[in-house]
Image (cartoon, rainbow, N blue to C red; front, side):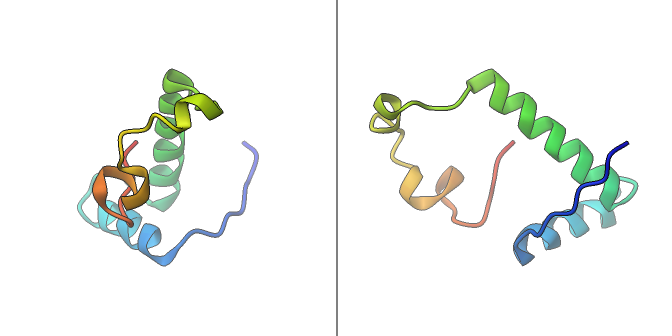
Length: 74
């Protein structure tokens, strides 16, 4: 399996560590692989937004996902 090195914000690292501690994932590698896979599937389902659709957003774009700057939903 190819190896990839990424740099992520501290708050994302903390969220991943918490998921591993709670037993949602066996380890960080599994967590990152599963979360990335889930995110790619969600992206393929919704697809990228073109310029016309961007102007017609839900109003949450300014506040981050789900109205919080530091939370992401996959």
